[in-house]
Image (cartoon, rainbow, N blue to C red; front, side):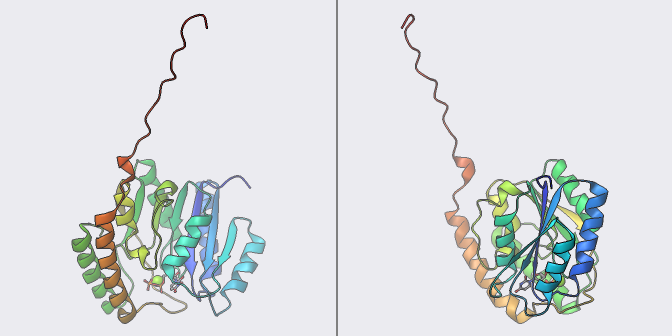
Length: 250
Ligand code: UDP
Ligand code: MG
């Protein structure tokens, strides 16, 4: 297989029923695009048949790679594992539950071609419960206000990155809610595109308001602190040294 240009990173926890369809949709999109790619499925310690489903899919498709966590470690950990293993110069992230539509990926890639470094999806018609949509809206506003950010929908996992902007980021549990902000601190030009969102047909949502709110708030304080201590890589440059000229004739 030629070296991948695009690495899909898909963290998953107990999504066995969604995986065959997701793999097929990614394959169909990439067949249309005709660019070399790989798909990194990160099994975050699933207790259902997800790993077996992945093994079966991987046996039939050389584009798939399977990584796994011994214990459930969360969506951010899954992303971090995928980022480390990704070989493409572009990384595309999406959820495994089929709520994101791989058919939107070409639109994200177009924005990278246009010169942006990171493209974040905005779910235009969101198919989640009223309480989930409302809590997301509040969370986005508070997060934007507290981190001087203006991302419309950070909870949309469908995003595309130039790899170099992920290589030097601090990785921590909860960081997936701050990725556009963290990359921007390293100089990334970030843009947003509208994307589709679909209802979850199989499996269950892993988050409710309770397990999101308090951790996300604690992370917000951590990220605010981090901003005051951020080491901006753009501050550093290598100084060119001209070799000393040797006197004529020596
Ligand atoms: N996920 C994971 N580890 C976890 C929780 C979730 O890898 O501990 C995955 C999950 O399988 C899905 C993505 O992260 O692919 C987003 O989770 P979910 O769909 O439950 O979140 P929501 O769409 O409700 O925000
Ligand atoms: Mg979901």
